Length: 136
Image (tube, rainbow, N blue to C red):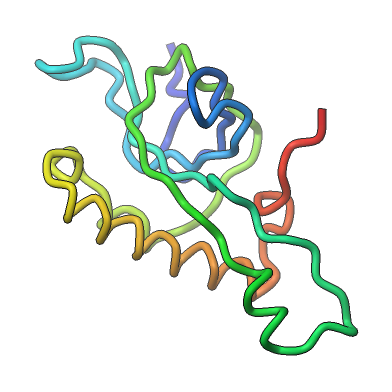
């Protein structure tokens, strides 16, 4: 069976608190682990998307509306929906590992790094589709 969830692949979460949110696969574990004996992936996604901005807005308002709230999560493959898109974020690979979820402070540090990467990507204007919420 071909690997669907490669690092950098964009997927949509189907179940849970972040259902309907877009995520990027950071690490895939097809075989599972001892603690999680099912195929799963470590993902980073956007909990709160940036708001719409216009030309008339000042720098302060623009900066406030361009903020992104990220999340990191371990998600079962059956709760992910793969898309045809991929993000090439080299900085994401080293930020989150399996040990990150054991300590809350490590988790917060990883979220801060991801937030910075996502906001840089958003302000540069690349991958605009990733930073817009899904329309149903």
